[in-house]
Amino acid sequence: MRNLTQGDIFRQLISLALPLMAISFIQMTYNLVDILWIGKMGSRSVAAVGSIGMLMWMMNSVALISKVSAEISIGQSIGAQRPDLASFYASHTTTIALGLGLIFGTFFCLFPFFYVSFYNLEYDITIEAARYLRLIALGLPAMFLILNFSGIYIGSGRSDIPFFFNAIGLLCNIALDPLLIFGMGPFPVMGTKGAALATILSQGVVLLLFILHLKRKKGLLGRFRFIIRPRKKYTLNILKLGLPVAAMNVYFAFINMNLARTASLYGGHLGITSQTTGGQIEGITWNTSNGFSTALGSFVAQNFAAGKILRASRAFRYTLIMMGLLGGIVSAAFIFRGEWIFSMFVPEREAYIAGGEYLLILGFSQLFMMLEITTQGMFNGLGKTTPPAIVSIFFNTLRIPLALFLGARIGVTGVWWAITITSFFKGTILFFWYLFLKKKLVRSYHSTSF
Image 1: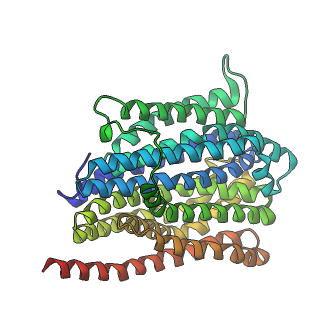
Image 2: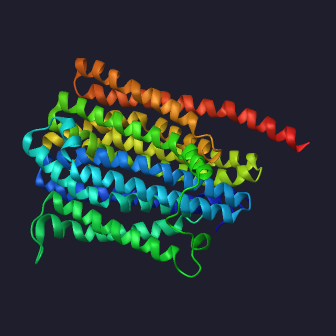
Image 3: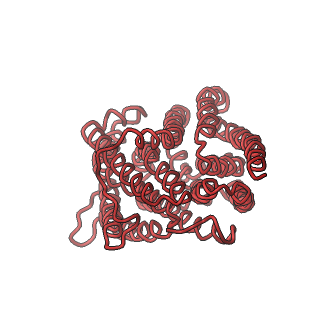
């Protein structure tokens, strides 16, 4: 375990955030590698896989119930010098993660058309998407457990371990994708089903590495039990910490599913291709800021529990500066080189022109998106996960009527402008909400210091 309540703030943030940022890029690269290979099969196959990508986003969001609660509860337990309590929380979150993964994996494996029919795609794309979903759903329990174990290590200040394991999984996926998608040597041509199988096998490798590392003789948190009978007190606290974040992200994914459907209405399968592939490219900023946000949350959780609120505030300031610099660079790249960036993944002319418009418009929202995600990490570390959820849910809901209103007037680009406009309000409002909370916390800190 790593104590984050002492030492140089900037160095600790970097050492904690860089592996997390790398993990986020690894997860993004999983999808981008699939798109790179599937893009060679045409934009229709990209649309099929991209529609399922929306569902996987939602499943990742559900998995945050255990992941985020593990980060916060274990981080605060360590900050309060209670490693026994941290171990107990780890057992609870692991049990919850496994249960959720089995429930959702079974459902979507048995009933793939329940989700796929939502997009009203052409028949051949719908069939291809359903086959892909039926196979990828088998890996959902592993995905839930991987995210949960990552949260346990992150809460313990050891973000380097999840990085190494996920990097090995990425290498497996890179090696397996061309073999299983296009077939080489003894491997038959499997198309999009091959991409799903490559992902499942790679996740299995990552999960096995986590289990072996946790169960070794000197495993993290005393080789805690993976499956236990949950106790009401701890389960309720886990849900209190994790549900607001999960609900916010699940709802966000649901809104984006509806936006994809609206994009399909005004732009056909190219509209879905633009949003799903463009969203993966946009993950450059989203995943970077999410990595630093998660690191900030773990850092703040330990320092807040130790009564060091001013140290936590300085960490937030450092993180904002770094994210602002990166956001400016990515915004410029999207605005001025969007078409070229998109063409690297989908070389069809119509597709990369449409995708370039997406990146151009979303380029104006990158700084505000990063501001929102970074501030969310500060709130999470303080154990106050509700304010980010309120802001996110309200303005994400607003995206649907705004997209329909603008889409009816300027076409599919109206959907992209709806995303950019609401991102501006989300980032700005959440940041000022934190400034108001900070004044109260600092006053409370000074009143208890004298």
